[in-house]
Image (tube, rainbow, N blue to C red; front, side, top):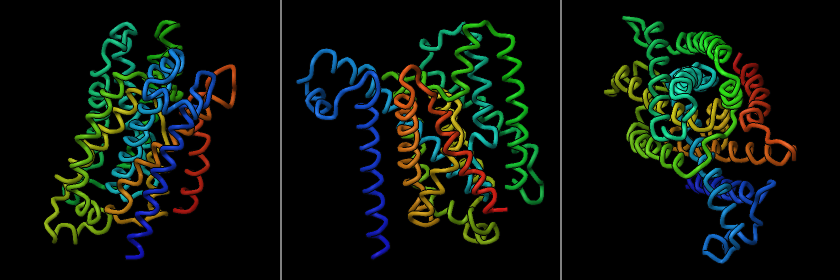
Length: 333
């Protein structure tokens, strides 16, 4: 009972922290609405300028960041379970790179008119990420033992490097204006910060969350022992395949809108496990709240730290995440 109360308290405090980060994202920066004016503006008592800034600039941006942070964190939590590796992350094992290459190719094919394909972009990213994940699984699949988690991570790192090279080739052959956009996208610049992108991201989460609720117990068993999981009726390859598709879909949908952002899928699940334990019923849905807090905070910091230009959220997250990754690498070595 005491542990359950502690978990509820941590969830409540984390949700409060997310609300505060959203308020900060709205009220801080060159174009912002003061904290005292947020609620009056929402209920229609603000000035035209305040309503324009809130509803056309700030609110859609922080909501996109919230959904993307949740998607990346959930994807990372799933991948860490599947690979039994605390260093797994959709950016590190190549899923983000696969989605990025497919979106870049699509961008060049539609002649930079991405706004006309808002709802198709997550699907394009998903196909690229799924193809990458499929190739990684194909190269790591063992006929006797199925998917080998350690090989999956190593192969993913190799694919990520190869796809990064392919991305450089694509960028070098593109027009100057295309190069600028792709470079900003690679740095994690939030380009899809409007209402349509919220509705492009939301369905992927709405489909994934019920499935993850259904598969929480199976995920606990997959994270522990394959023999026990089989004995208790878990279909290892089927469940791994389903969970991998969900992880790819969540990561690719986020990447298609907010750019190539790594480390959130690494950091958020770790923090959640430290706070509430490693049972999926406890940490799985705390991870996306923490992921949303990190991404919203990183974007807000990137907008206020340097007044003349916005620093992409991906760079801020990398500055935070890279030392944490090295810490985990040393801890698990």
